[in-house]
Length: 330
Image (tube, rainbow, N blue to C red; front, side):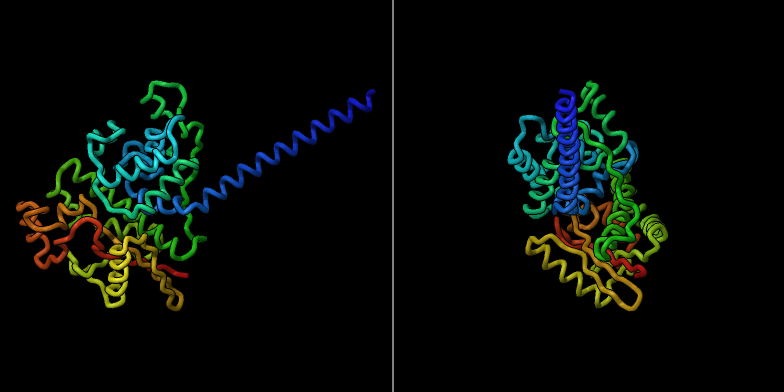
């Protein structure tokens, strides 16, 4: 009898261990699947400038992506409904259709941007199926906002994933892109914050006085040379060379054909050069759009004063205004 009880106990113990290992393996598989999903990288590339998971609660220019997920998804939301809502919002962001009233009140309506539908589909598909990065402060903020002790919906129970800050092990193209996007985030945060608080004219002064020092500081952080160059420069120091002009034209073709651009990588001797496009959104047109249509007379006058040889006007939404040119050691 005792032997029978022991055997039964051992059988249960072995089954429990195997079952536990199976769950751990499934969780690992889920993590690997999330890492390989194309929507993850697309979200980091296209969304994190404004919706960064690492910016502090006070020092940000848009809500984190996890906030969007929690406001749009509950236990009754299907994936198809969520993707359709994201496609609709991106095509026509406006205060009337907003579901995040607090975010609109604080940050304003997001600038209209043109993304390929496939890009938004992949980002939305990833957001629906997987846990995404969230700031350490977010869970308490969300619970206080809803007046509850616990989160709700698909975002319930998500843990903070540490954003990668060591890029040395990444493939060269992805590494250069990370350098560009982190610099874009710093510039964008300061520029959009200035526009929101002080207006377009003050933002021009910021670009004129602070853009170069901030870019240089990010070059020091990443131990790389980080530049923004253009075929239609505002500052003549940002004029593209022949190789960069060729890449600008290549990116223009990608955007025109509604393709998601990918970093271009050149390797020369012991150096790596990475290029990635800078595209326009609705907010850019305040200073880079059509004179006296998008650009007001006071702004145009200020531009003429600061940049007598300015060529960086006449753009519409989703045009290539220039490229990031990143150089670092192999």
